Length: 191
Length: 183
Image (cartoon, rainbow over all chains, first blue to last red; front, top):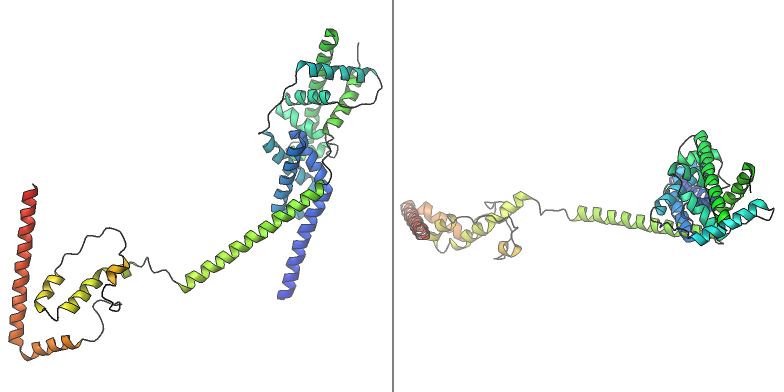
């Protein structure tokens, strides 16, 4: 192979790496952002984590073409980056009034057919309940709330079996339901 | 108020779906691509700096080979001042040859010699000791004198030997008296 042919081939490879990465950004940026947001619950932090995820992907872009599923590969990087960022995050706690407002909203939505909206208080209550879950239940539940990720992909990100993900999500939901029901009963009788 | 499990499931499905439905600010992809391009430029620049630095270091090493760690060279530098001094002054004062040669070498301190010490009289640096260069006019005259008058030359040599012995004895006496006074 002549020198010119080698140079052309190297340029093509470099272009294909860049094209693959750009395509990955266009296709999976929102998924990566959502994964980061599911852990960090903050837009700025989630965007920082998203950028760091793609910078890491740039560093290992030669692998990108070799991976079987770029989506899962990026999702796994995003998850690790978000968890690393999440360790620095402070947990916020809800006051009694916010919990009361959230429960009131939940009860009205449960008993009527009004359009569902997750208000700020309800979102905060749900977040505090999910944060209180054990880690092995919390992680699959958070990832399963992202609509782009199916149970098999969550399993690959967390490196556990799909059956395990399903059972953990089921248990986490059960705990959430019990806690919400208990809160509903308590605040419903108090008012 | 009794609620069925299906109500809870339905409500929890909706709540979790909305909980995970985060929307990034507009233009996330463009910001990401801009960041990646900047990172790539920085990476390329850094690679060039390293490559040029490597080339420059290689050229420097090839053109200016490092001689500072050559121990044989350091050894020569220690000897040279004595050799040059003896060569220059012994012609005028033959009796001072032996005291100069018998001088005790200074103890090594581990520091490298300053260049000014070795290049004090402007004579060219000797690559080998003793010098391989031809004898000077004075040295030739001394040799001719020794060949022509060997007995006188022998007498001069004996006188020099006696003088050096006396000097050595005097130095020993001085050292002994110093050590006694220190004790």
